[in-house]
Amino acid sequence: MRMLMRPLLVVLSAAVLFLPIHAEPGPVLQVDFSNPGLTPSNWTLVLHPDGSGHFHADRGNAPDVAVQSMEPIAVDRDIQLSQDFADHVFETVHHHNNLKEDCESHMKVAFQGWKKISYTGPDGQGICAFNYSKDKDIQALGDSFVSVASTLIEGARLQLLLQHDPLGLDKEMQFLAEGSGDGRLQQVCAIRGILERLEEDPDVMERVRKRARMLLAKSEK
View 1 (cartoon, rainbow, N blue to C red):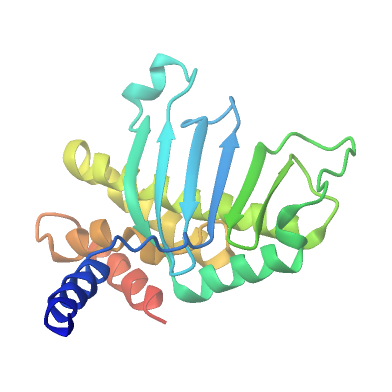
View 2: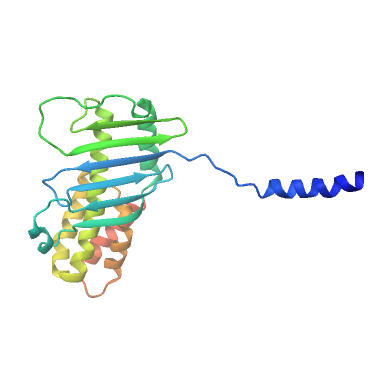
């Protein structure tokens, strides 16, 4: 009987080792933005606690002229934001009960774009949608996501200019440098790829390469 039990125990132990392990999904945040007056007019940003995520933007109902004006009508790419930014985002969300509250001010303010921030995690889920939030932390969070999206769209614009209008890079890089300095554009680290290409390309203006080098150094801090 003991001789029969030992092979059976070995088989059972091996079977346990190969059982599928279902890991509990981690927290994830999704931001959906819509403003028909902009190009692209719609975008979605997905963010994980480690700063990884995905960004998708599309043209929406933008006029055809946008296609001819070096405006990126669609962006779809994986992204990597800084750990500090991701930490701040998720800390803010947790501090506000995982967004289980009304955050729209219902005030008569100018339309800034409709923002819907959705949180899903093992500790619950919540959705906060607003044009202008009555909570300063949530409003600041929405503004920061818009600034990050603007940076990602700017990166796509730089790629278009590099391919079709290299002389236009000078003005665009000046805007990027100014915007990253005053907060209109955040997380320049998310467009390192195109900045590195510009820094290393001997065919673009030296001023463009210099600004790319400066922005890359700034993004590492």
